Image (cartoon, rainbow, N blue to C red; front, side, top):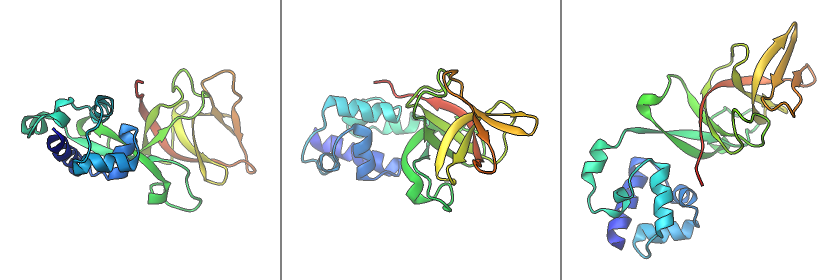
Length: 205
């Protein structure tokens, strides 16, 4: 069983262009533990196997079954989309040092354009975007009134999700949670639109 699981984990690493550290993060284990799985020196628990399968929208048999070629043929093609963390001032948005993980989406369901992900932190956009949601963003520097935008603040180093609204010459970043106040954009508090929120996903725990 160990050699079968090891071979299938290697297959997943290749298909999804992952490294050992990323697999460990998905499974919720240490990098050394994931390394032992890949080498066939130990077997992952069913809980970890379930996390890996759920992350890629695959059946557990894809990991447990020997030579799951029939599953490869029927599994939908997925695309790896980078999730941004802290954005280094002056760096391109999708610079490697800004990326803290990846989300996986079915290719046929994706809009055109350059895509990235953000993880919602806090509850200022609840109930629309719950805390911890992974939000798919299409990179663009314009937004329609009332749409949810990914916006850079604090010297272009912090990305936030807010609705962009305008009153006269005043531009406001509006939270959906009425307990929070809007952010007013001024010369002393500038903002930069980097994308439009397309949809969100949540991991069920």
